Length: 467
Ligand code: SF4
Image (cartoon, rainbow, N blue to C red):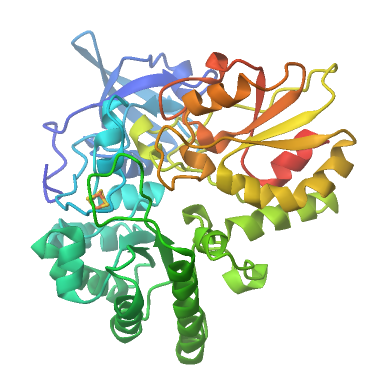
């Protein structure tokens, strides 16, 4: 449904999938399975409108149950959540992507995963809600009006190249050549926008990357940040030109970013462009100092995650309050619906469980990149725990290729590794591998051959679990 559509009863209803016990919604008898037709008379189209209405102290909820419609009045403090979990963050229809990027990770998923994972979105609402990147190729004047009118900021925009022909080629969509005009309009209207460049070696690195960063300085200097990230190549790609970076190519990207950071600093007083942690691992080069990330604004996109994690661990060890920065939303977070505490709530219901008193050694389950992050911290963590602490890196066989981030581990791969590990140890698993307590392949921690404790994916939580 186009975003210019009026808010009418023709809007598809939102379906309630869970009601938080003791919540205002529970006290008024709203039940899982109910359909929400309107809030305060508005047939809301997505959780953004839903939240605006649900924040009111008195909310008239029109629900349909078994074909019968009824009006329920919920009274609560202004701003308190209703406590209703909905089946999707977008009720009308997710704006799907009409690009065909050769580096698209969704095109590289193996067959047989949950259907919702194969849906390619290019929806500015999911950009606002979950930090998904949008190419703006399907953005409209009505969307611009809504973003500005409802202050949907920040947004996240895929840039990849500022040269129109190269961008159209990368997106395999001729509108890719012109859609960055919307980026200019958003920035002119004062919307905060973060950009991303997915670098494909031999295509938009080298002189093209240089030209893109020049284009950003020239046309989009109001961008808050731009993340430069390497493409992911799974074993399931059908694109012969898509390949991993060599160490020399990763080094060249880091050098380009460093030289542009210096130029942006001279011109704008800030670095603006940042390279993904993965590049420092690939090159290999030491990670920048924490201050060089200027507050870690693209932390959730794998930029500065290592330094933020270290800083968290060290702050927690000193007894200071850590920032607790961890990846809150996984790559596919939005497909699992809108949680009851609001769309910015954590994506997993798991909580750390107490350690078994008989457990002596601790094993931290992680991806292959996670291993490189955690390995230098092991002596500190061992001192803290007072028992042997080791890492259990899990190679990503499910996706294969160069996919090594912890957030894309599947239960199947974790099972295979844990089956060879000794019983009786404490196994800590970071919650970034789970969405609603499920791995990407649909398995759960109950399917694992060892009992594990799920720990929020940040340094402070890991320190707390070890203490
Ligand atoms: S815009 Fe994103 S979802 Fe669409 S094809 Fe490109 S990478 Fe895939």
